[in-house]
Length: 500
Image (cartoon, rainbow, N blue to C red; front, side, top):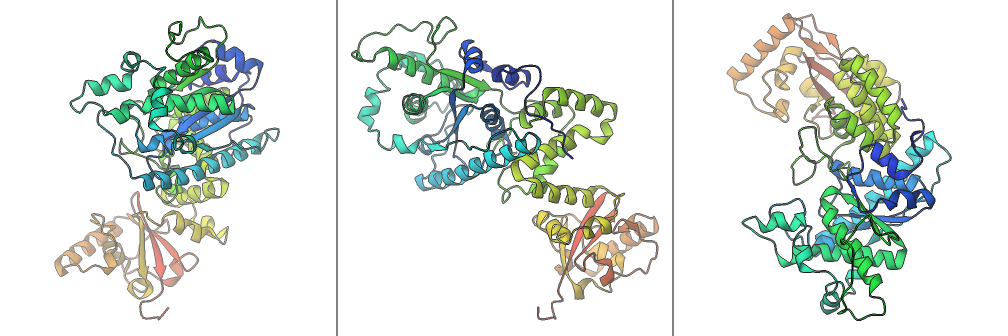
């Protein structure tokens, strides 16, 4: 189901006003930016931190902002921090970042470059499905290691070091918070904002970049870049020792801005909890780290309080569509219409339509107890294989050989698989249970069956002597055993004695 009609809202044609309406604008260095982007297309960039091998949901706010500019016809440059990632940004942290090995940063940068490329490819195609007028061009991705590796320490001290004042740099929130901590701040992390400022100047000079965007925790770093560009332009042809008059560093009073900064609110829950690896709740964009099924389910489980913000920040649905959707959702919140729309839009945009269908199939067979499993899994010859792949690391998936399962009483299968008093056994059929424990579990399974609480493929088991048969496995491969709302997916493997 597609909820999206056209990515742009009908309330304003200006990209800055649209971002503001979506709640995707925190601060901007000059009110002139809205006028400039109304009059012409500009070039902008955002830094992408390679401190992990994959991006996560928390990174999507900045990626989506770049996407909005890209779809609006502006030139977007995602900048991979192959150099700055070797130092570490002190922003948003009370302790020093762990210094990563150079090889690790390079490997992360390569992986994330591929992810960013894939994001713009799938997200642009996602937008074009609903609006074919959108172009197919892709942003140019750069890595700041390509110029920082050519910059000597002495050159760095002369520029940008000579133009940026320490007393101003000390006022940045990222520095102030660390100065007040027991650990303090290292010289390396203190100079991070100079490295980022140099990036902005370099891109402005060599690629015509006028705007830097980033999360709200990047405000100080962005300001340093704007100031460096203005001061560098002001001293063209002058000695670096000559004083430069800058009105308030940055201000609306400046009529002809040469560079701009824009920040986006950090993606958090309604309780203020951030997303990310340091917060310990990262939902990765890499399917090897977070399966498409778990990615989809993360958004299905979003609270009603968080759903409107995530819809505005993480989808291309218009503000009007989101408002209408939320009104429909609140009329029947138990249907979780907002969450289903959110999960559908984001999963399709990040992982593509095929992956979305697999995630929806897995969600249906695991959570929709009214569905016909046979119909869901036989309508497409690849459905069973896709389901097993989607659940490959899910604890609900239990793998058993045919000689261990076929012909066994259902009460024994349920107890052995851990559906009764399971406590999360990884592969109970291959585990040795004490006689007393086994008898106790079988007795509980019998009680469950007699009470009408044991199901096979969503059909209630009524016969106490019911055995598990080969025909119970859909596609000769998978069966579903359920007690109440707890579902186990049983994958049938060849007999251990078959020689296969």
